[in-house]
Image (cartoon, one colour):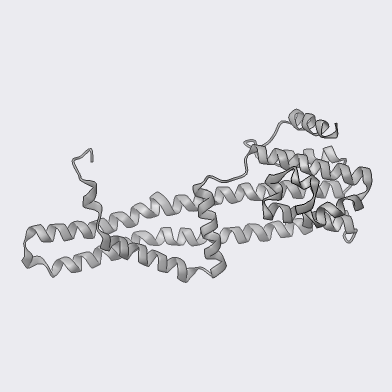
Amino acid sequence: MLAGGKPLVLLHVSEFVVIGGVAAGVLIIASPGHVLKEIVHKVKDSISAKSAGKDEFFELLKLLYELFMMGRRNGLIALEEHVMDPQNSALFKRYPSVLNHHERLQFLCNGLKPVIDGKIKPDQLEDLMSAELQAKIQEAEHPIHILHLVGDSLPGIGIVAAVLGIINTMSAIADGPEVVGERVAAALTGTLLGIFLAYGFVNPMANRIQFNNASDHLCLKCIMQAVAGFAKGLAPLTAVEIARRSLDSSVQPGAEQLETAVKQLGK
């Protein structure tokens, strides 16, 4: 517009139909059904900038401390009613960011169940939880791979749309330079649209999803470190401190802040 161009010149519905249709085809053909659903879910979260922040990690650490203190004071059997039915647990209800996040809640409960049942040695628990975490990390990568595939395909799809536009232009040469110019502009718009969507939207979206996934996996790693430490006999505050130190600096609460907060829980 600063150079004197009019935005409506870029509005060629046929180019949008070709590029959008072929890109949707690539997405559908390349993705199993469950991955398509996950892509929709992840894209929504990335648009809303929904990722775990400092407050959520702080809540998670306080919940872990309360669980460990209950297990230390009243015996591990006291944790059973909370872990087996967290939705009706008064303890979990105080921490909605964990209770309402299915993946974090499930990972925490799955980690504590073998500790309560005594079916596994404490030094084996971390390997068990680590295997589950790695499986979740691999599964979360699938939507990113598909979106990068679509993003890398879009410039080529734009060229296809442009070539179709040029073919259409060749059949209209006899109609005069105005008609030919309009159709060439439409064809070039296809190339522009393919490149712009690839590098302006789809690939950046995939990277944003990757950052959100890293935040989610950091939550799970935090849970794993704390539960494994508690299972090995560490004091509740020590187990939680190990988990705190495993966090990125951007979401890591201060040691004194955490200690003060957990002492207030006891009161």
